Amino acid sequence: MLIGEGGPVSFLDVFDGRDQLIVYKHMWHEAGGIEGQCEGCTATIVDVHDVSYLNHRGVSFAVFCEGPWHEIAPFRAFMGYTLPWFSMAGVKDRAVGDGLLDDPGHIACYLRKGDRVFLTNETIGRGVEATMLQAHLLDLTAYGRKESWEVSPEGWPQDRTGSWWAKDGRPVPHWTRPGAAPVGATGGAPAGHCC
Image 1 (tube, one colour):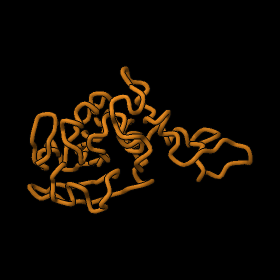
Image 2 (cartoon, one colour):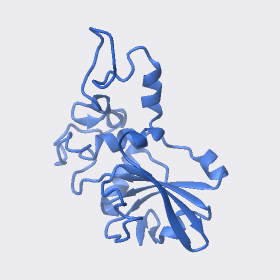
Image 3 (cartoon, helix red, strand yellow):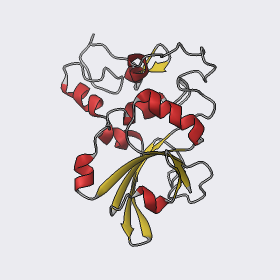
């Protein structure tokens, strides 16, 4: 059973009556506090707010975390996420829980036929950029993401890959939310320990 905002739910319930499901499997650092969660996962999921077009085409979208619900709920509220989130702590089914990729921070797609569910696709790394609207918008600009993998003319600004995700030890979107405390102020894990 998964744990969500309304308590325990079955995996089939997450489909919300639809035939397909996309799940983002968010890395979770237990007891890490809000500021100690994965910068890369935050960057990956922060732009996904309205999935009405997916729903219209028979696809549900949810976020699964390995952490306990009592830690996930405050993070979800702080970030202003409205999509359904679920704790997959203790789930033993690899296709549902940690996944066949054995690493959180990835997207899994499922097809439901009656009470049977099929894992149809999993992607990790650059494959999860499908959800990262702001990364794609940066790609349209003259300097791009300013990451070291980009081929840029001599003298153009470049930083290490993924450096646009964090500022002052926190995922960038944290600083737009009231009450964002400096790293360590609430006892969370230091940033830069993921992805």
